[in-house]
Image (spheres, helix red, strand yellow):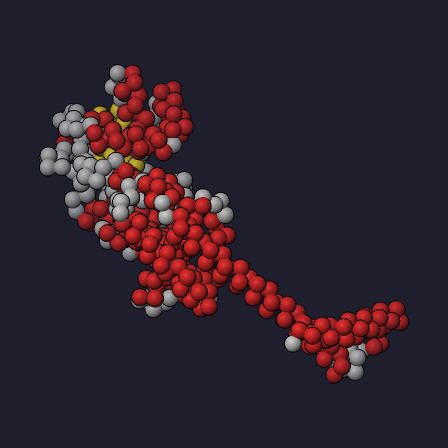
Length: 430
């Protein structure tokens, strides 16, 4: 949130002659209620009047990495906020930013951005960052070319319109951007759950996605927050999930847990905690086959009463010990988490041992069942032949030539001989 200082109005700066029009007329990528597109202009805005949007999904997902109490501020008040976000954007994709800088240096800014009346940048973070760096490197004055929207975040109705436009630009009509999965889930959570600007259906419609997809991403964000709390990190430390590369495990877990525990309650909460121990095991092992491991976990433990009971019983003490270790020290980074896990090898070994035993046993049982089904199928085929006087009811001997009949007879002789030997083997085993 912006600090106590009074917000500026870019539209007033236009009236005062401090912000100039470029002459370009924008075409909005979507229709916004009560906004007349004909009145909009593209302006050349001094960078000092602008600041990064802390409500942006990408920025919100990593902002706690900088500071728990970082304050939004204009450049002329305190450059720490903008500089911190600038560094994050640079580190997130250095090569892309360098390309943008080169393009602007060679040809100028080719695509305009969008800002709010108080200077909040809601589209064009990379271009804004490139311009900031060029200004710092050259000492020349640069301007951000952008549409000034007559909105601020002060009104909830305005925030809903702003989010609608953001989605249209970033993920909808203008073509979906390379939006990080964690950033996207965080944005969905912030928009629907925290600020309540849209319903799931609204967000799905504006982002050209299905309701099912949005529900899964929203559920993933909620599950991630629970996991971050479980490992003794702040619930908004989403960058830990990014750095560990484990988002896919949560996205896979949401529909599986919902299906296994449709009524929720204590049994679901217990299953979630066990799942978190599995996630920690994946982080500690650094495996590159997490997707396969996740499928094995849900198939053989979550969806198996026997497997679930065995895993819960065998890992209960280990998970209690793991939780105690995590509570000893606040986790502020993936390095912190891995450090704690390195001190929890005995507990993780127990979790790993139980997981491997349950999965191996389940797969052995699955192979046994498959074998029995094959034998049963052979028996039923022979029964059908016997009932049909040598052939299934759908066939008759006139359909076969002499060679085929001899071939079938030879196979039946082999089956008869094998059956006698196999019966003796099973008699000895019983």
